[in-house]
Image (tube, rainbow, N blue to C red):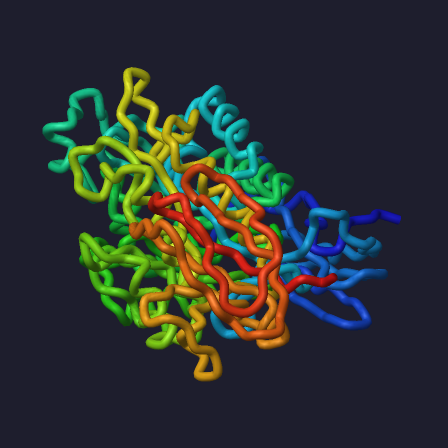
Length: 509
C-alpha cells in the first residue's frame, strides 16, 4: 500500500477530458476518509490531458478516497497509509495563544523570514545560489511573489508566464521609463481563462524544496508591480486564479497565503473586493493555512475573520517595530513585520539601512512579542539583488538574523512579551525586559535589551532568593558571555557597546 508522511503530500495524476477548456469547463474533486476526518479537496488541470489532485493527511493511519468530476466519466478510488512524520516535519504553522505561532504538532514557530520577490523566476544558477544561502539556516520563512514582478532593477521578462498568450516587446524598457508601463501596458495579449502549467510547475518545485529545508513559503498572490496586465484582471479572473492556486499548492504544509503585497497600490480594488477575495481564498483552502494581506501605507483591518495574522510594513519612516505592542492590542493577532526597511545602498529611503539598524529593529520586535523579517538591497557589479532576485547574500545582517533565530529557539514556551505588560512584575523605569509569554514559566527567564544605549554596568534585582545563570548577549557580534550565578541585588559590568542584552535563566542546580 502507498505510504505518505502525515502532513506530507499524497498526489494522484489522472487522465481526463481536454476537448474544451480544462481550466474552466471541467471539475475534479476528491473525498478523503479517515476515522478522524473527512475532507473534500479540489484538483486542477496540469496540461497534456493530466488532472492532479493533492491531499495533505492530518492523521496517521489508513485513508480511503474517491475522486470524481466532469473531467472523466469514471470514479477513481483507492487507499493509502499516513505514516508518522519525520524529524523535521512538524506540520503547518497556525496562530496560537493569540499572539504567537506554532506548528500543528505544538512546536513553536519563531518566524524569521526574508524577502526575495522574484527569485522563483530567475535563471537556474541564481535559484541554486539562493538555495545554497538558505541552507545556512538563517531564515525559516521565504516571502516571494507568485506573479512576475516589474520594478526597479527587475525589468526583464520571466522565462515563462502564468497564462497562455503573448507579452509586449520589452526591449525598449529602461530604469527611466519603466514606470510608464506599469499595469496593463499595451501589447500584452493573454487568455486569462487558460493557465500555463509550466509556469506553476516551477513553483511546485520551489515550494517543495523550501519545505524540505523547513522553510515556510509565504506566497504573495497579488501585487501592483506589473507591466503585463496580471494586476488588472477582472474579479472573475482573480477568483479563478485563487481557486487554481489553492487547489495546486494548498496540500503543501509550508504554504502561507499573502493575499497582496502593498494592497493599496492596486487602486482599482476596493476594501470590499479584498474582503471578497480573502473570503474566497479561505473557502478554497480546506487546510486553513495562514492568510494575511500586506500594507504600503495604512494597515488593513486585521481583525477580519479570514485574516490569521498581521503582515506589516512600517507606516512611519523612522519608527516601526516599537509599535508592536500597539498593533497586538489593536488587532489581537500575531504581528509579523515583513518589511521594516532593508540593508543596502538603494536610492530609496527604505532600501539603504545600515545592517545595525535592521538588526536592531528585529530585536525590538522580538522583545515585544512580534516577529521581524529581513532582506537586503545591495547594488553591486553583478546587478543581482537578494530582495529581487535572490542569488548570494552580500550584507552583514543575514547571519545576525540567524543568531536571533537560534536565540528565539532557546526561549521557553511560545515566545516573549514585555515584562511591563504584567502587573505582578516590577523593573526599573528604563528597563526593556522580555519574559516568556507563557505564565507557566513565570520567574524562570528574563531578557534585558539595551538597543541603542550602551551602559557600562547595570544593577539588577528580581528577588532575594532565586538563583539565576546570567549571560551577556551581544546581538551584533553574536556572542554569549556566561557571567556566573547570581541572586538578590547584583551589579553586572557591561561592555559599553550598543545592541547588548542580559539573559537570566533560573538555575536548575
